[in-house]
Amino acid sequence: MSGRLFPLIKSVLMFLASGLVMTWKTNRIRQYMDRIIDYSGALAHGIFRQKLYLKDAGEFTELANNLNNMSAELKDNMERVNKESSRLDVILKSIPDSMLLINTAGVIKLANKTAVHLFGLPQLYGKPFIEVIRNPDFVSLVEKVKNSRMPASTEITLDLPEEKYLFVKLSPLAYTVGDLSGVIAIFSDLTHLKKLEQIRKDFVANASHELKTPVTAIKGFTETLIDGAIEDKENATKFLYTIKNQSDRLNRLVEDLLVLSSIELGEEKLNRTDVDLSILIDKVMETMVVKAAEKNLSLTKSVSGDKTIKADMDKVEQVLLNLIDNAIKFSSSGVIDIGIMQEDGLTCLYVKDSGIGIPEQYIPRLGERFFRVDTSRSRELGGTGLGLAIVKHIVKAHGWNMKIESEAGMGTTVKIFIS
Image (cartoon, rainbow, N blue to C red; front, side):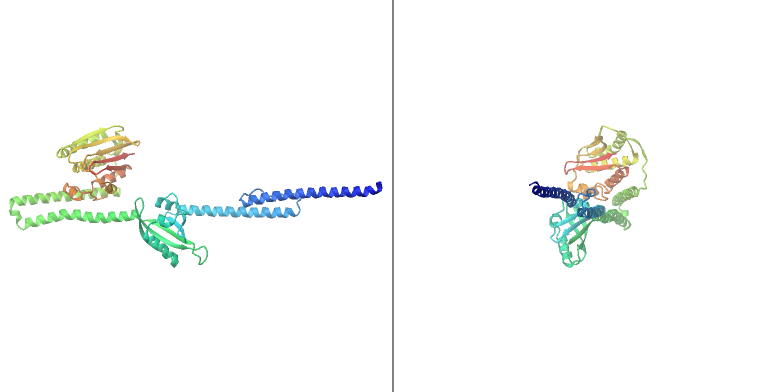
């Protein structure tokens, strides 16, 4: 009986032993697979862990090595892509002009920060370009480039928060030959150049006109006197006074142009000393009080805060004289207040009048050479149109800032912030 049981027991033990071995191997394989799955899952999500080690894993060791090699290559490729992406981002940020990438459906797929700033929108990506650039010439140019697949350019004007003049160049974009992916648009802001060009044209036209008027008057009255009017004592005297007045006007104009030119070219150096603004205001008021009284205007002084500054006293005196002279010319009654106060943590020198004021749309142009809000009245009052331009350049030469607050019919306040 025992002889029969022994082989049976032996078979059962061998079966159990093989089952245990199989279970152990299965669990070991499962552990390898779990580690491999975790490792490959991390790779799929861009998580590059340390190398996968499977000790005595047989065929799995080769799989682990392949995964380790793949991880190293993926990591290198990702780093290379990130570097290229960072480099491209730096290049885009460094481009001084605004850039848009518009796909074939007319949607903006890329925009640099300069473009975001230019168009005044926090987000350009994903917007149809016609919602951002409402200009028919630009829309036509985009279609032209898409159809011809050739670069093109034009000048456009946009009514953004303020009017902008732009030169735009469009180029087709194709990632693969013959397959148009979109259009790249580069915008160069010409607004400043256009304004300078307009100022230059205005200056030439206005200077010519300002010079021609007194010269024509002087020539005309001189010819009249030569033709015999000199014998008419009464009229001859009037003509001579007219010639003198026009000569004075011409002289003022030339002097103002020379002063302005010297300041702009930096030929007049600033002699900075300690200047007591309160004393300087008193001096200027003494000079202008008679002229103000002729128009029933009174001058007052208001002083608070710091009174002593580092500045060129003669230039600051010239600034005050010009500002008060303007206030007198364009006020018919009331008070002109000259003072010092603290505003926004800075010493503020100001001249405030209760005159005719300035319409809001003209305020940005104040300080341009020969610019006048009321041309006929300004000439009638003897202005050259250069006084405020001289003030503006003296203020700029000192490194200060000027602000003009005005409203038609409500008077004007010119503030100079001294830093």
